[in-house]
Length: 76
Image (tube, rainbow, N blue to C red; front, side, top):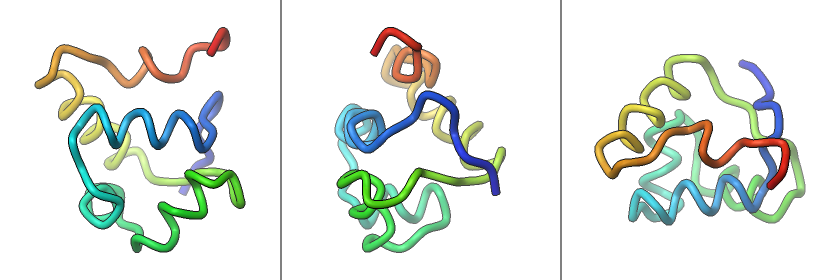
């Protein structure tokens, strides 16, 4: 697993909402339980997930005209 640079709870929530997913659905995409997604979104713990999940998220975001990098810029 890897921590995602420039990624905080707000970024996770923004990505999830952009994709129209519930916390449970988002958790399935990144291989985590709903409770962990809630902790990420509340900034209780730093988000961590594997490269496969990051690539899947980037592809899903591409389907709605976005990129993962749109959400993780330093100026956010």
